Image (cartoon, rainbow, N blue to C red; front, side):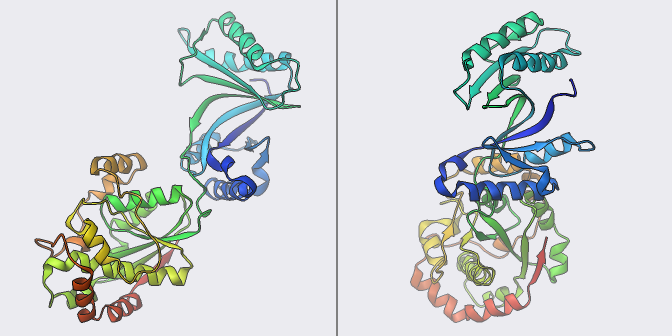
Length: 389
């Protein structure tokens, strides 16, 4: 590739363009998150031509940047791009240089799809003329033009004074930049569902604060469990988070005097109240859970209603309508599944047997009062440990 062409990573947005007058706020948040996740300085990423550009400078590890970009939420797609003058001759010359690089080491013709778009309509040539000229060039160079090719796409974007040619566009995570919807407390267990719920919440702009209720004798033992490993995977999508390790033994002691068929519902009620207390202190606007309607006994409509009584903050359930296999597929995709299925002493199922599926708010409210639930919340939080990353 000739050194006269400027190389950059071009980053495209998705639904950010639906944000109207607030659009620039979302773009600035996306830029901030990219800098944080890729380790870039402000001058190394620019907002130009309705996109974010990362000019490739000497010493930059471009592949490392691309590997990290795949986890940045709020991006529609990204690609390595080269820029040139906004005229047909310059575009054709740059395209020829790129195609020459593509052809190197290829023993047979590679199918290539050519696409073009003009952001500036004042040029004397059309997008179709660009495509026609480049298709002829592809054939002349012994390659194969193919409108069905998905993995080998050359895309030309023309502005008033500059044109970009990209090849090998990769899809992003989509969604809204993390932080754009504020903070939310995520009730994180050791299972499959809650990490997936956290990922979905992050895709809608929620910055996570994790709460993990554990059955270990000390918080330090919980810190050496698989939970930090799950958090490490989730941190690829947003590296800045806080986690509260809350011991369950105070609750379990009070529960020993109760009928254990109500245990999962009472436990969920405790977790909601602890999460709401933390949310108030952290300035979070919602609670996130991994509940899926009817998946287990504690997640029937009646039990969900009974367990969330007295909680004022919104409780968001991103997985509420998903089948278990759908949740597992997403867990595999985001990289948490193998960790989630590792053996773990999950508090959610320590003593429960024959859980009631149709509890009432009155019954659960009475049991919570008998347990002195507010005192349990207070003591549990005092015994908790907070870790910031």
